[in-house]
Image (cartoon, rainbow, N blue to C red; front, side, top):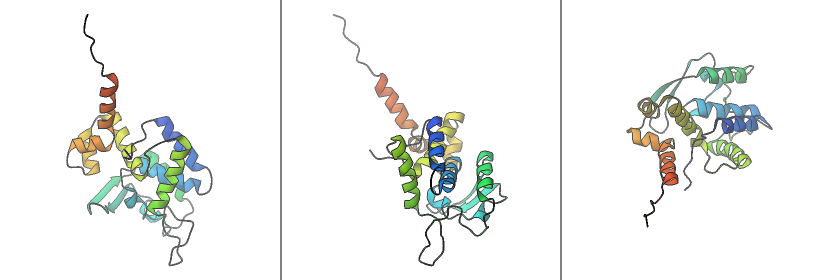
Length: 192
């Protein structure tokens, strides 16, 4: 099975953040991952942002590419601090997650979805994580939100899912329940 899974361990989240801070484009990669785990959005909705989209803002305002629905997403206070520090000295017209290579128009555009996946894949390889990709960040938000609140209805609304069971499956809770059930299963021995 190659379904992307959430990162269930807080320690692993910190390890990945620390790993991404290192090396070339470390700050950008760290902020990308942090944005992905704090903002319950798809990578395709995050990558086109420019600095002006987050500077002095309390909300992300966007039209989701997949659903074409307009979203107003509050910027978590922890993420706000990360973003504010990251955009210091940057111009409003710059892409938030700017590529290091110019595009066909000679402009430094945003990194691509493939580049974002490559960034996450390096972290996954470093820590021996299977099934990690761009959706992992969004799923990680959902998993930890649910673990902290138990509020599947709000999470369903956040993700625009049609049923709570879809949300539970999406964030890996259904898989956790199946694993627990199978792990604890035993045959009762017949008395002889």
